[in-house]
Length: 507
Ligand code: CLF
Ligand code: SF4
Image 1: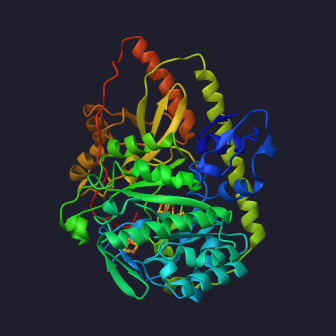
Image 2: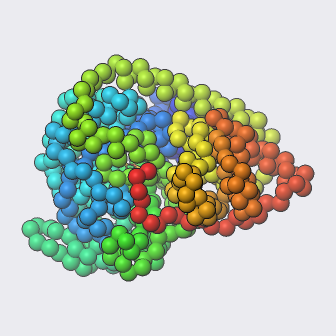
Image 3: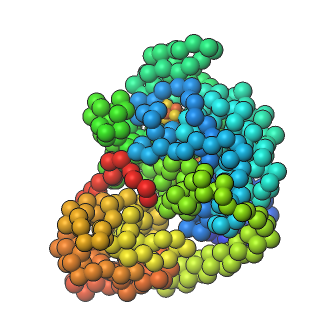
């Protein structure tokens, strides 16, 4: 049996090729002879339609959060309490807080409007387990009213060991813990204090208690058969090198997936790190760390650091359609059969996408080259190139080589097309965000940005408009190799790219 990446296992499982996955050690495994019986049906059921646990699923399935948990029991140096929990969120937007009853109504309203919404998460705006009554009341109401929706939870881990039994009893099968260190000497630079046993604890002692509780909570979750994802915020100069050790520690305790996210830090956020000038990583620094950890366990690279009331596919934000005022006026008819029928159509599209990708890979089989390129894609979902350059507020980035196309992240940008204003200012920021890419795939692009991108060495490609992403980028890559062979182009090192640090506005 050989080891394999989660994305490959999920792809293969989607094709019914007989791959298995196990959560022991957090590394998926696959063998052609084991057949489908090799995969635990329980694990497959949990991940196949969860947009955060499966990169492949995130093109097709949506999640939503309900902001029922305002309080927090620790302080992180990248957090300003005016905003949502930055562990599972992003600074710059504040959620509308809900009661469990309002949250339940909202879930039904969203699930009826967006039938591919499969997961409900509680991720703040503070820590869900610092607000256990509101969190578990919400889960109780939702599991009764909408039993087909998976429940998900994100926590800083301090109170986690006290609640594992309750989490299990509500059938919450996905829990995220944010773990930024396993060494209190590192932790003291991230956490100024925690609230523990009715008093405030500071310094290295606070970090020691936090890491012990996080490790204990992780062990208890995996022992209880709950899939566990670990989020880590990469803070250059503080924990960037240490995160390799964190990766080993969480893997050995059975974490299923590791999500290393960039620190988002700017003075206007009013956080300790924002005010003291602590920078976040560049795109290539983040990718190098993720690549280094990938040999150890499955890495999540498609996280959008979404807000505590996010609604929709990852990367889109439909929360404005579901304000408390709007949902309280909505007549909601929750039709589980209708949702199921819609999801079957989504599955057909997903299978078509996988088949198209595989056919293209077969055509690439003859090619052997060490060349790898990065490309950016404008998409609004379904795994297709279906967004105009000017309407994209993010680009998905793929690394392509003769071994196929791998999703390596997304880059948020300012909208280029702003109705005739500000376009000249926006374009340089877009170029800096995808500067490490040789091409950008779009459904459509105007003459002006086309010329400027070309001048910056990024080829605008619109000939695959509305086609599947992976199939198209592999096809482009094959032609790219041909252009190298013919001497038309010479591969160059594209250098680094920026991760946007400013406050996010609505996506
Ligand atoms: Fe929400 Fe988190 Fe559950 Fe997903 S988000 S509680 S696991 S349903 Fe997902 Fe958003 Fe990243 Fe979180 S993209 S911030 S990892
Ligand atoms: Fe802020 Fe979340 Fe940290 Fe609490 S756990 S201080 S809400 S980032």
